[in-house]
Image (cartoon, rainbow, N blue to C red; front, side):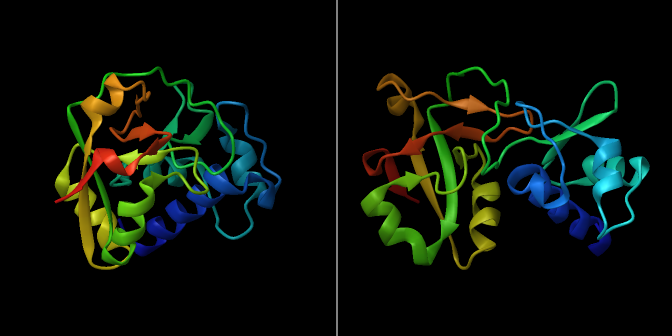
Length: 178
């Protein structure tokens, strides 16, 4: 993805996950926004339907979805605002991975994984994805999550359309540093 598309992807993440009101964009309860309203309300970029489709289709993490009719867009996860993604609880694999930076390890080992400003903690089945996520913030470290035991203990897991696993929190007793 070139710099222009990356910049637009970051912009879409900002308005669709965190601050739709920054451009007077209305999201429905599932996080969908009208593409025409997004285009009309955006002043920082010259957006078009085709450009938005290109960003959605080429985004390496598949952060966005366009509805079947092609008129609405939403972020697949990562919201700091309340949206209902319509996900049903799923049985997770026995282990999941969370990537972070080395500087956060002591705090995570003490407090577990907390969602912070997001609706959920994000997990993956792939150590390489976990490492790349951690590398965005410094020297990467991966934690293994005992998802099987968490599920048996009553934690609900959700899986997004782009294969990100979501959970409310991960207490430290379910974590081990890789």
